[in-house]
Length: 125
Image (cartoon, rainbow, N blue to C red; front, side, top):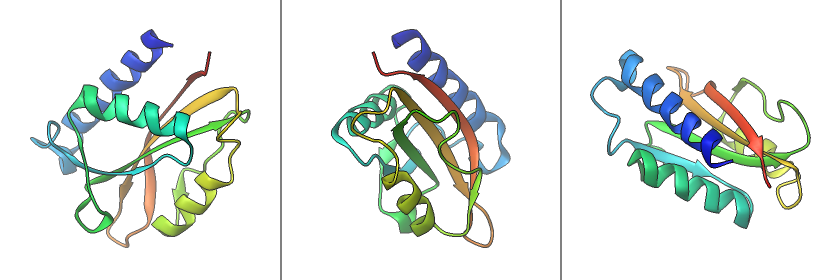
């Protein structure tokens, strides 16, 4: 699991460095966190710490980090019409006993819809 988590952090770092909206903003990036259970909250904190992101309110967020547990291969959609829809969908997952962590990075588009930038998954152990 540690190796997969490290791989995810490296992928997120690369995505954030390459995407024009993120140019020069990776360390200290302001991120809204959605982690509906205690175990997903711990995973989100580990990721935030490794990458050096700062949790912030929605209004000042540059991206959204979502960590859920599920037995589904892709429990969340690639796009949602609003942050509220994404939060609702994350809350519907088996966040206390799903066998796989799913870590998503979403970005806001010009219409305030949220679109997935990255998705990685790994076993809970």
